Amino acid sequence: MGMTWRAAMVSLLLFGLFVGVWHLATMGSGPAVTMDPEYAKLVGATASQGKSAMPGPAEVGLKIWQHLKDPFYDRGSNDKGLGIQLAYSIARVMTGYLIAVAVAIPIGFLIGMSPLMNRSLDPFIQVLKPISPLAWMPLALYTIKDSSLSSIFVIFICSLWPMLINTAFGVASVRKEWLNVARTLEVGPFRRAFTIILPAAAPTILTGMRISIGIAWLVIVAAEMLVGGTGIGYFVWNEWNNLSITNVITAILVIGVVGMVLDQVLARATRLVTFPE
Image (cartoon, rainbow, N blue to C red; front, side, top):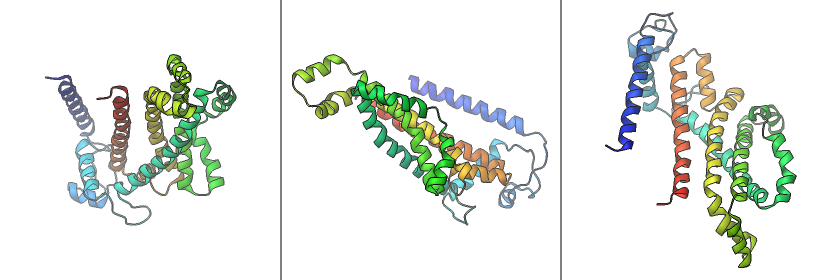
């Protein structure tokens, strides 16, 4: 049996153990909670009846199935399907992230190839990099005056630094012998950047992109909680205000799965560049 299958079996075993502990922890009596009328009808309870303040895996599984059956319903500004909320969040993340890619990689190349620009820009990077992305939100809302565009700006800011720093590091780490040979052959700077530096620095650049997408997905949830309107972060906050803990747990699981998918896409790209088939 290969390592992949053994790892999958251990993962399934751990998942089963987690679900079992979760079920045992929530099967006891607890304070009654108000339930969604439609959900109460499905589980055979009244709207004011509940076994425990914390839902068990069966309740969460049923709620996930409800969302999967109709993920794109739209019943007003405060009642949209989980698929619609996810679509808004992913669109904002990808827009801000791609803008950051377009800015960070060229500047990273410039910093990595030019010691002068490295020293000149380093003070600005060191001052701006530690600022929490959410600290930019009030300023973005004041200047842009649009909550969705402000969220995209915050995603751009948080995605920028890991890509820029990793790109600069990867470019600066390219073996000097290769660059000296290129200069000897009178290869121009642009051709040298695309034919020698970019392939050599690609694994480091993609690692920065992978770090950035994880941070961006973390930040969008918090940003949408602040600005409201639409998105998976707003969905979590709205369901908490409605005291629907089952929906909150469902959203948390969905956030984790989407984050894993985004990370694995870039992890696969990194492996293909590092170990081409």
